[in-house]
Image 1: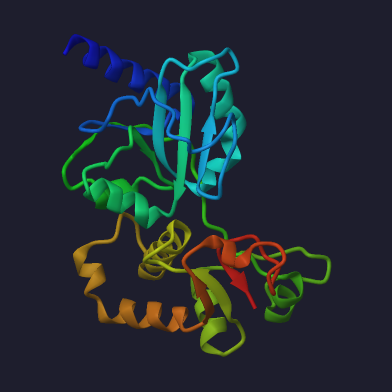
Image 2 (image 1 turned 90 degrees about the vertical axis):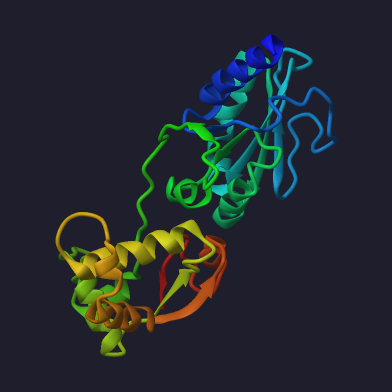
Length: 255
């Protein structure tokens, strides 16, 4: 028991060093000292990447269920692996998959690192998350081409813009002047975040959404009308990656 407790304490320390906001789980394997063949060296597959410490054989391996967004902080993860002499295996997956892993008891992951804490709130029904911290704030951006903004009167030819509200976007959609692409609200963090942001903005006022808001027929009508402007949807924000028809890298890609 003393050894396991020590391992779990070290897992928490390494998790903090690696991602400062990875959520340490209990009831999971603390460490896996064997090589599972996921990747060689610091290799990576489409869904898994292992960071080996540069100082030699790792003393342990930390397994993290992670959102794909965290590929952007690979340098920081490698630095933490070097400093701790602990290998880190990142299992990249969608937000819904991370939520389901939590519902299943954490499976064999030592920590989870989703794109938003709401996936923890919805998935951690068994209360296995014992330590959590925020690493960053990632706003959802509604991007629009300059030519479209000028046509809608939201910008002039120089590119100078005026403030645009969600009500303005709703009006443009209602008039048939604007369509956009959006990731799925039931499969993607960016889609769910955008959906909740739209609802909150159209409701107005301060504070989080309430059950009364969700039952409000006028709000339902407004959100339904706004989302009628979606002409393409995907389970991943890659739907708008560079090289697609729109060429927009954001979650929402106006047509």
